[in-house]
Image (cartoon, rainbow, N blue to C red):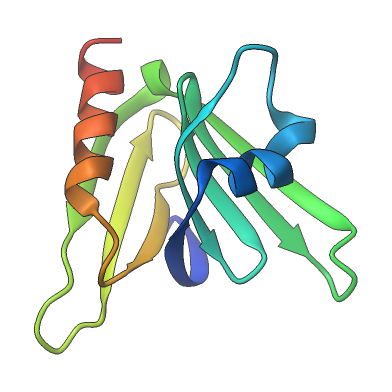
Length: 123
């Protein structure tokens, strides 16, 4: 089983995401779509998929996962069903465990799919 970010992600604004991810963004990088799970932030930027995992009681320990679009070998998005309140995004990266993010039922999965397809298929 791959990495699973527990909780359900809800969309957040680009400004709020860039504020939280600012120490990890490089010059010229901008957030295109972002989602938050409790204290963690997952963002699709113009350059990569970036995940900030805030750990511990104080939140001082942080893990940052950066996946360049060119390294993504496949992805899938599963919409929420009638009895399933969450959608799921799964990203496959060569040589790494699958990354799985649960999304709120109202998350615009078509936007995520379109952006990932654009970045991974056209480079």
